[in-house]
Image 1: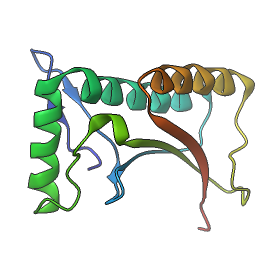
Image 2: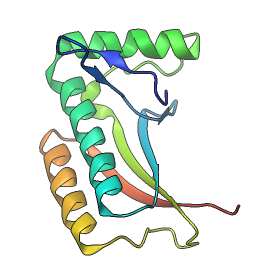
Image 3: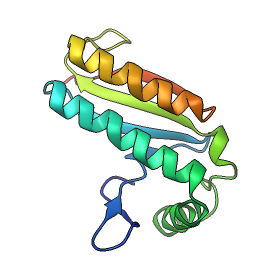
Length: 132
């Protein structure tokens, strides 16, 4: 789903639902570690797409249409927006399961997590080891 944006909100506005979607309804947002501003953008992407998915029926329909178009079927369709899991993956050289992020990013993640949990969504953050 990476860079497969959904036109929404008028004008040239487009929203990236997620980078990857799993058959277990995980919306996975990925960014390589490169500082606080990149990570803040990652967390905001997750919040915006999830909030729209839950609160805007039109966006929900567009999202499922985009998923069907990209994934060639219904295996990854979102049946209930309130049951999706939001996963933030930070790609880094670290091998730990949790990423080491700057204090500012920790605060930004805590705010994003709080907003998403207010919608009843499960939220997690993971380190993705870049072995290259």
